[in-house]
Length: 124
Image (cartoon, rainbow, N blue to C red; front, top):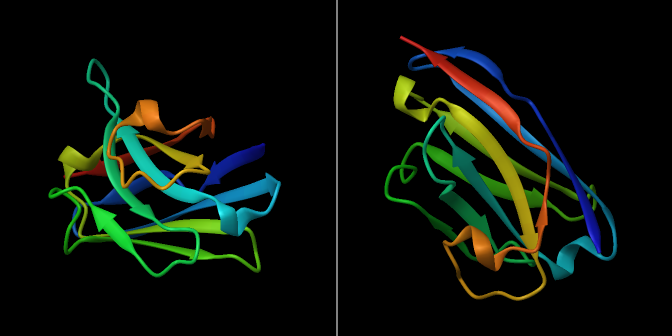
């Protein structure tokens, strides 16, 4: 198993930047695919980005391409989401997720482990 703790959320201005972190503890971090999802009030939990265990492959939701970057540092057991040029539509609770199986999945049901979430609010 792996335990996940997100940090770095907060209030950011439109066009600014913010970096979210996801610290993992437990079994070997590099064996896990890591992903970021987000959920706005009254909406489903949506995929944002994911990265394979070795960090070589990444994939993004269309809404995140060109603005957000997912990365990981396996030596620090931490995954990141760099958010550049956010807009008010990016306001949501952002969740870190992990799974041992790389399905290249964009569905939250395919990830077994979750953090508690961190609120990101983008002011216009």
